[in-house]
Structure formats: C-alpha cells, structure tokens
Amino acid sequence: MTVFGQNGHANGVAVPPLSANQLRVTDNLSQLLEVLPPPLRAVLEHEETVEGLIEIVLDLGRDAEARFSDGRVVWLREGIPVTNEDIAFVTARVGAFGKDNRAGIERTLHRISAIRNRQGKIIGLTCRIGRAVFGTIDIIRDIVESGKSILMLGRPGRGKTTKLREVARVLSDEFGKRVIIVDTSNEIAGDGDIPHPAIGRARRMQVPTPEDQHGVMIEAVENHMPEVVVIDEIGVEQEAFAARTIAERGVQLIGTAHGNSLENLLMNPTLSDMVGGIQAVTLSDEEAKKRGTQKTVLERKSPPTFDVIIEIMEVDKLAIHHDVMRTVDKMLRGGQPRPEIRVRNANGQVDIIQKSDIEAQREPVERTGSLFDDGGHGHNGGGGVREGSRIAPPAADGGPAAPTLSNGKPLPATVTIFPYGVSRSRLERAIRTLRVPAFIGNNVKEGDVIIALKANYRKEPAKLQEGISRNIPTYVIKSNTYVQIENVLREIFRMPIEISEEDMAVQLAEEAIEEIINDPSGGLNSLELAPQSSFLRRLQHQTAENYKMLSESIGAEPNRRVRISRP
Image (tube, rainbow, N blue to C red; front, top):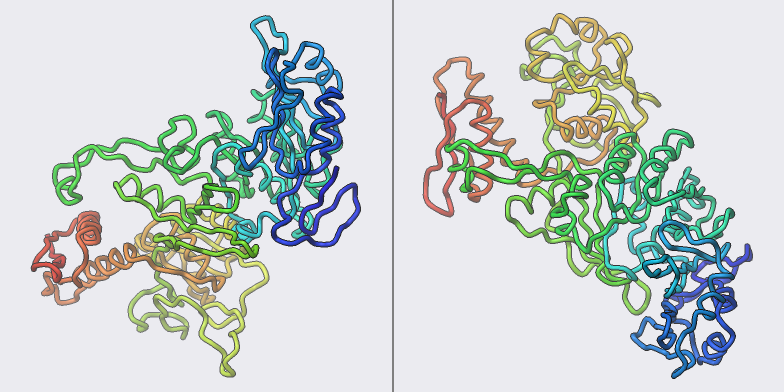
C-alpha cells in the first residue's frame, strides 16, 4: 500500500496535491507487511484502515500487537503468542542489525528494532512505520528559509525525524543547497545504499556505529563542503561539540536532540553547551546588591550553537524560541520565557496563537561618514557626520533607495571591510551568519568601509590617514561584542535593526555618560535618566559601573529613575 503526501512523489512519479487533511501518510506499507509471518499479515490486510498504524510489536511468548495513532491496539492472532519461528521469519527478511540493534528494509523508511536477552538472542521486535510526508514544514518554513541553525525537541512519535526529512528535501530541491544528512540509524533516508526519494537531492552519509556519529559530522563538513548539515538525535557531549564546530564554520545545522523542552536541555550537563552552557559566577557585594540577587549566580557560558529552538508539543503544535541567546539569559535570571506558539488548524492553515515576548537582540551602533565624531565639524572630506541611522532614506519617487554607503558611493557587489581594533573572528562569524557579500581586507587601502572600535580610533587616528584621504566610510562601535559587529553589517547592507527595551536603556545610560565625560566646560557633574522599571535600572547601574561612574536611583515609583554622576 502506498499513500502520497501533499505534492509528493512515490517511485519517482508525481501525484496531484492532496488536501490538508491528507498530509499524514504511510509510504511502502506493503513492503513491511511482506516481512511479517503470513497469519499476522492477514489480520492487518483485513483491517478497514491501517492509515494510522504506528508500530507492530512482537515479543516472545506474548500476543503480537499493532498500535495506532489514535490509541487503538489490534491484537494479531489473539490467543496465540509469538514464537521464536515468528521472530526468525522477520529477521531473515530485513537488513542486518547494527550495534544499535536497528535494521531496516531497503529503500523504505521503516525501522525494525531488536530486544535481546543476555546471550544476545533476539526475543522481541518493534517494527516502526516510517512515513514520507510532504508539506509538513509549512508551519516552520520561514525559519528554515532564514538560514539559521535549528534544533528540534520533543517526545518520540511527535514527528521530529519526519520534519528533518522534509527540511532536507526542501533545502536541496527547492533552494538548490548542498545538503548532507548524517544518518546514524538510516532512519532519515532509509535502509540500503540508495537513499529514499523523500530526501530529494540531499546526500546521505551513513554511520558505521553510533559512537562514530560525531566523527562523521566533522567529516561531512571537511570533505563534502555542505551548506546544510542535517543530524538526528544529538545525544552525547562529543556530538554537541561537533555541532558547535559545524555551526562556527558557517554551515546551517538542522538537528534534533533528546529532551522535551529548552529547560530540559539547559539543565542537561551533557547537552547544555548547544544553548550556550551554564557557569556559576561570583559577584561583588555591590553588584549583587544592585542586581538584587545572591553573590553566586548562573550565567550563560558562551554563544549558543543553535539560533532557534523548536519544541514539538504536538504534531501540529509548536513552541518556537526565535532568539535562543536572550531566552537562555532570561531563564538564568529567573524569568519564564514566553515562546511563539504555532498550530495548524483544521483547514490546514498555520495560526500563531501566542506571540513571543522576546524579539531578536539588537545593540545600538554609531555610524559616521568620517573618522571623527565631532558633530560634523571635523575633517570628513565633506561627508558630514551621520549617527544612529538605521535604514536608507526613501527615494524621491517614494520607491526604495538604491543601496549606497554613507559617503554616497554605490554599495559594491562585494564589500571589503577593514577592521580597526575589531575582532576578526567575530566579524567573520557575522559575515557567515548574515550571508552578506563581504570579506575582510588586510590593510586600509583595500577597504570599501572601515569598522573601528571607538577606543582605538580615538587614540591613534594617524594610522587611518589613508582612510581619511580616500573618504572611506567609518562605522564606529562602542564595544567589541558580536552583536554590535553584526549590527554594523546590518547597517552597511541596509538590513533592519530592532532595539529592545534593555538595549535602549543601556544606550540612554551610555549617552548620558559620554555627555558628562565629554562636557568641554567640565561643569556637568550629573544627569538624570528617564524613569525605568527596576530591572532596566539595574542594567543602567551596571553600565555606569562599567564606565567607572557613580549612579543612584532617585524618586518614587512609577517615576523612579537613575542619576549618573562623576566619581
């Protein structure tokens, strides 16, 4: 029996699209039935519908069971228990069992798993039905197309592997990307040397033993130049490390992991590195008092491997954490994240029934058309000074403006960036992540733009005289963080930048501090900021401390605010 999914294919033959209610289908079920003993096969063949069949369980000395997605259980050959001959009949007709005690049927997605006794003899079989379902990732298609690395979590049977398979097909066939599947148990692309057609043009690398999975993950990147790597069931520390290595090389990673939720993953010491890891940090007495916490707190150890976490609550109901970094930070501060929840309704349409309370993190950057930040009165080659701009102004006719640099010159097809005091590794990572046409130059003469760290270019402007003479646009960042570097690239390539409440509060504090420090008369000793919540005030106090300034909260709620003063 073969049933086709939406816009699906079977045996290379295209079929008409099916309705939304026909998305969940079973492929090549007849091939699985053929490996069952004839009496058991006959019962299933006489069932009115086997559409929702999940698995067939054969345990020595017990009645055989057929389990369905609606909770129904059909007893096969009731009253006659499974014998050794029944189990031998099945094992002789499937592929060889690997060290993970799994086998398959060539060019199908069915999975046969064995239970052995202490002597290694097979005494039980679980025959899991493999489904090739087309059209299931419309609920997350926008995320898949974004190029971000995605990790899916959820209990068994919720469709993680099915979605991985469909993601591989869409990215390889529809977007023409080089996709490699690391298929540890041949569950994604089926048994045999020829992968199942459900993965499209994606290539599959088989894994000799589960212990070798992390090595094959690295081999896939080093030998086959993929743009996307798909991996099922990341479960041990070595695999988590391999995933981080892959992501840092600019490859989009689509995977699944053991765990039901982001919180489970964060508390798992083996796999927490994939979401940034956790470390204990001891604060000073003053800092602990400002934060309103104990002296020892938990903080994220590093940037997360995956950009997006998708929790599969039900087959057609997903909780999506779009910004893993900020979500983890909020959880470690004791907050409860509010993910975006999407469902597919009865008509097959995708509805967002809950919006996320965390937007993508954006840090403000300064932008100037010249080297000097002096309000437009310095030597700038006539370019003036432009600060804080976010997008290109519209054209006179109301249409979109042609992309230009801040000096008015057209944006080159490939932009050469000269970093001055800026981390090259972070800049390289941002270029890969945003997929912008840019590369890093080795000297200022090669540059179309300069990205400079504020502290550096103020101290040694003589080193950038070549840039001044050529009127090269200079983008100034206040700190050498990845987010600020990423936002500079967004600024250059006219990609939208959003500022969160936290970033805005910090930016207001920094602007006040700079105004006090740079006051030419020296008479400006303090400034009061706008009223903020207690959490945002703590961030402003922390900012003042980082700049070695004094700060205090004054006033009463709801007008309580921070005053920043000279030390």
